[in-house]
Length: 264
Image (cartoon, rainbow, N blue to C red; front, side, top):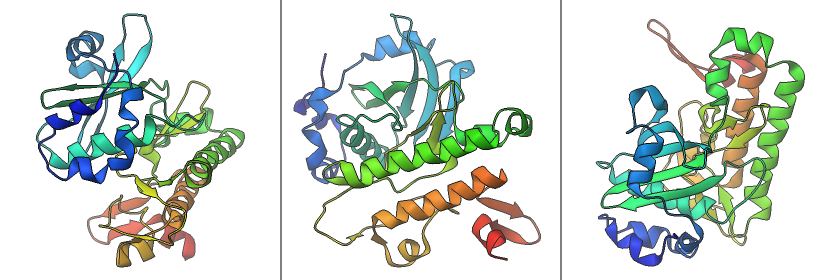
């Protein structure tokens, strides 16, 4: 089964389809799962299968009928912003294939349900790994960290230079870098991504992203360029090298940004 254009009419927010006109042409290439299939695969979205949670929904581990393990991302039905994220991610990933980008297997649109299905990554996210000091010492040696950095760079180069029109991710961070069994990195979560035509210098848009990773010039002006992703990638490299968080919170001293610590 494939998604087709009529599926888009189930979205209630009037600006969603217009915001993703360039991506709608790709929806017919995405496999459509039924809600029943995904409910069975995740054991009725059982809490024990939950492997992640974000601002617009939760992610569950599931197993399809053919025995393939998948990650099932369920967007919150109450979030109109989630509608936009869903459509943006479909438009971004349905026609892109690269070894350092997460592979989308399909999705589900039934009523107000919006679900995306990806390949399952054995080591969860880079953020998850960096939180485990024992795994950092035993698994993330310098060779592995170097390969993770290079893999992320290749993925960014692909969406910035090779995909037409170009794509800016807007939310490069440790929790959006997934790791396969051999620690091969894949960039995920394209819900905030923007198409970036080649003949313009920047896009004026609302500021979106994550505290600690935002490029200062983008945060101040709202002018988005591909350099915004590069700045976030720089913060990510600092995290991979140091094993520290992008932002630390202290009750007395307040927020401490990793880039500030490096500059001291």
